[in-house]
Image (cartoon, rainbow, N blue to C red; front, side, top):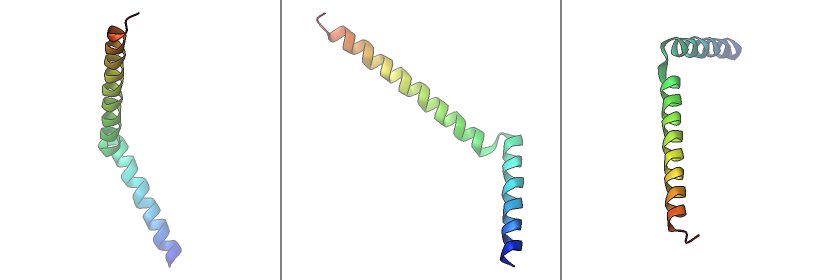
Length: 58
């Protein structure tokens, strides 16, 4: 019985993940969020680096 339930759950998860892939779903949305954060972090790091260079007396 438990094997049967596990198989049903596995199939539902597979079907759901395929559907999300096709639609761009939550996974794609999450990827875009991470990409946006990475761009923001990079911009902040560059800004800090530029400010640090401006304040150096060298």
